[in-house]
Image (cartoon, rainbow, N blue to C red; front, side, top):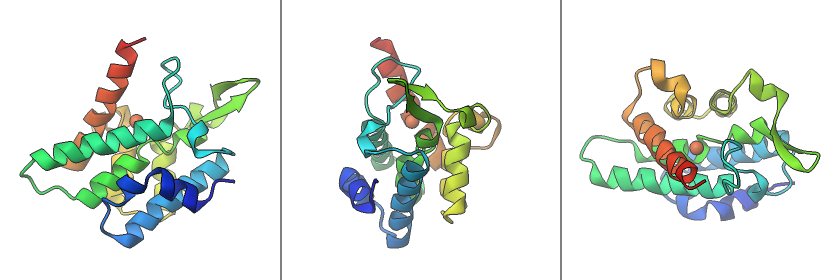
Length: 173
Ligand SMILES: [Fe+2]
């Protein structure tokens, strides 16, 4: 079973960017619960995406997005909530732990994901754990679900950071 300490050590640098201790703890709790519900044995087992062959680990993708988002934050003068931005970056794909499963020697999409894509399942789980709506929204809107909404600045940053990483990986296949 994946423990809180596994998640804290995996994302230690990124979690340390969050000032609010309660928010930091909730981010860890949501990852832990998603791993538990998705029956993952190790945090590093989950793949980044099934849309690209050998896409690497979801945890590595999550770290890259958090660092890209922080770099953008560092270059901006606008009022941006860094705690929400980092929490959103760390949780944007947590729903993938509920979207993918390992079956018959390979990763496949779960039945549940045909109705609730990972932005939705991740947002629902974050809401269940009382994360601020700003963070729930970043998760919900990080992909096409957010295209018909008015994105917050934090959400714009995560949406684009995510696609930079995805498109670069895709171009290399
Ligand atoms: Fe992502």
